[in-house]
Every structure is written in C-alpha cells, then in structure tokens.
Length: 269
Image (cartoon, one colour):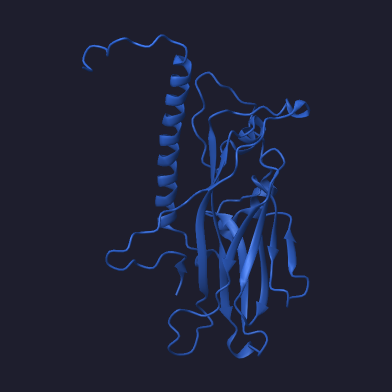
C-alpha cells in the first residue's frame, strides 16, 4: 500500500506529528570578494521537496539476490523540476552495491537499482553556488515489502515511501532570488516596499523538460498529494506570517532611539 512517512493515524490521545522545516543556517557576512552578490535581508525563500522510494516486486523474474526493482529520488512537492535550486544529488547506497556512491548531476534527481534487502539511503543535496555553499544531508529507509504481507506480493502495485519537507533559506542573495522568480517549485515572500531585483533568469525549455516529473513514467505512483497542495498552502500561510513578523521587526528597529513615552497613549490605560 502506498503511504507517506508519518501518515499512520495516531492512537487516541496521541499528538499529530508537526512538520519541522529544514532551516539552512544564515550565511556569514559576505566578504569583499562577494559584495556583488548582495543579500535580501529579513526575507526567507521556501523550497518544498519530496524524497522517497518506489519498489516493484519482480515476481517470476525475481532471483535470490534481485527480488525487487526500485527507484530513489528527490522531486518537487507537486512534481516540478528542482534543477533551478539543486546542482547535484549524491545517493549513498549499501556498500554491497557496485559503486555505492552515485552522483546525479541534473534533473530528474533519481537512480534505479535491483536488490533484495532494505537499508537506509543517505541523500546529499548540493545547491547552486549563489544559493548555498553547504550540502544538506537527508536519510531515507528503502522499503521493499508492504505492511500487509498476507498473500503473495503484487508485481503491479509498488511499495511507495515518501517524505515531505520544506527547505528554508534565510537572507537569500539577489542572484538566488532572481534565479527562482516565477518558478513553480519555489515559494517566494513579498519583498520590502521599494525593493527591486535583477531580471529573472530565463529557464531553458530543454532543462525544464528534462526535469519535469509530471510526465515521469512513475508519476502515477507518486503521492500527488491533494495533501501536498494543502501543505503548500500551509507553507504559503507560514510565509505570510513570517513576512509580517519581519515587517514588525523592521518597524521596531526604525523606532530605536525614539524617546520612551512617559505614560501610555490614550486608550491603552
């Protein structure tokens, strides 16, 4: 049965798991050599992602050492191309595989293998230089067998395990902001009043087509969440709250140095 990590219904009295976005540490102050790459202060960019595996039982074609064919991947939450943000992805497989460190340099960020055992896959995300100079490490458990093991395993219905999360980039560079403008895979905040950015970076159609997973052969098995749409709406709402907090911080900052009121304003007594 297809399911998402954390999708099981909680028992009576249990709390529902709360999504904890992955927050990239704020970049250090740019040194003199990087002054051209200005940053947008008090702004955050959010990139919703899904990472997971799809495993098919091989049935009569199965052998003792190769019972399943599986694919591990990182994709946009609603299947958009992540190549606008990701430069490459490294998948670290079990050491029993030939060349267990697999590097994927372009979208779609995925690889397919055959095997018989379940294990944890390390997934390292590397971003374009103007976005972030540090890698992000994720971990995913490859699942080959369904929860309900009564009867023979189907060769037509795969076992799907996916995790949803959001990568949050604080104080993005102007170049990063320009790169992802108008891109459906990225949630962008409102800019401070009067702030202008460079022109959006054009996206080659060939690049978009290559990484566009809505036409992916496994697309019918992806958790094309109407849930994901709700999660994206929640992320957008969170972003609006964050924007409001940043606006209030700027207002408070501008008030620093003003004389303190000796008594509350009328109506607040």
